[in-house]
Amino acid sequence: MRKNFKKAVVASALLATLSTQASATDSQVGVAASFNQNTSEIRGIVGLNDDLRLEPFIAFAYISPDEGDSFTNYTVGSTLEYTKELHTNIDGYIGGFGAITHFDAGDGNTNFFFGPLAGVEYEFTPNFTLGGEIRFEIGVGDLTTLSTNSSILLRYYF
Image 1 (cartoon, rainbow, N blue to C red):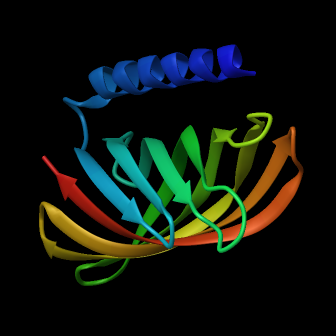
Image 2 (tube, one colour):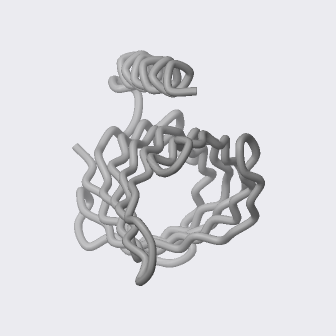
């Protein structure tokens, strides 16, 4: 599974680079940082048109339960979001995501995650936004999971 995970990381990075190069001259480009209870995520932002954006990401989670061993998760994936202005300086968005996660604990399980997402962001300046996002995650692979994930996002547009 570790070989497949490394291949997925390389393929996602290549896709993100090519997507950025293809659309950087036409639309918004930026970076984002996402935070929740135990996961940090870095995203690239690629505006495909005025209402559609792609956000490839990498994430890292360190989990240390009260009992038992601590472990880390490594994730690569991408979101695709449709954005809509809700009010002056406030945008909402809906979309979906897909990701692959490697759990560095026990047998080193790997899961594929996908599902819908929704969020809002407030534009402080034309280059800086603060928002919140929620995702419903379906995980398949070595483990089968259903969960929700909410996070705070800081986005910076170049």
